[in-house]
Amino acid sequence: MNKFKFTENEIQKINKAAAEVEAVSSGEVLTAVIKESSNYAFAELLFSVFGGFIYYLIAMVFYNNLYIFVNSLFWTPQPWHTTAFLGASTIVVIGIFYVISNIPGFDRLIVPKSVMAKYVHRRALVHFMESGAANTRDRTGILFFISLRERRVEIIADEGINSKVKPEDWKEILADLLSSIKGNQTAEGIEKAVKDCGLILEKHFPVKDDDTNELPDGIVFLED
Image (cartoon, rainbow, N blue to C red):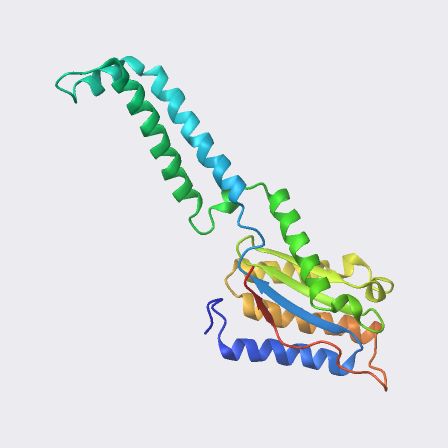
C-alpha cells in the first residue's frame, strides 16, 4: 500500500480497467490522484489572523479584568506589562489557530467550495497538458483527476471527445465517483468510472485498425 492508501491490487484493477477501455476504443484514458490541489496557505493565514483579531477584540472588552490579572503576576507591575501581555497572547492565539487550520480536512471548513473548485480545475488542466493528453492524434485524451483533500473530481476531455460526447453525459459517472470518494471507496469508484467511461468511448470512438496506445494506462499519483 502506498502513501495514498491504494493497495497494489487496487492499482492493478484500475490499470487493467484503463487498458480494457483502450483495447475497444480509440480513446486515451488517464487517471491522476493528488492529495490536494493547493496548500491554501493564504486562507489558513487569513483564518489565523482573523481568529487573533477576534481574541484581541474580546480582550479589549475585558481589558480592566485583564489589567488586574496581569498586575497580579508581578511584584512591581508596570503599565506596559498589560500591553505586552496582550500583544504576546494575540500572537500565540494566531499560532494556535494556524496549527488548527493545518489539521487534515480542516481546509474544507474554512475555504469556500468555489475557491477549492477553481484550484482543482486549474490543477487538472495543468496535468492534462503536462501528461500529453492534449496531444493525441485524434484529440481523444480524457483525464479523470481526483483531488482527495477537497473530495472533488474533474473530468477533462479533449476536443475530439467533446465534439461527440456532451458534458452532461459524464454527470452520472462523476456523481458515482464522488459518492465513492466520500464513502472511502476511492479505488473502487475510480475503477467503475473508468469502465463506465469505456462504454461511452466504445460507442462514439471504436478502436481503429491502426490505433496505437499513445499514453500510459497506469494511474498516476501526483506529489503536488
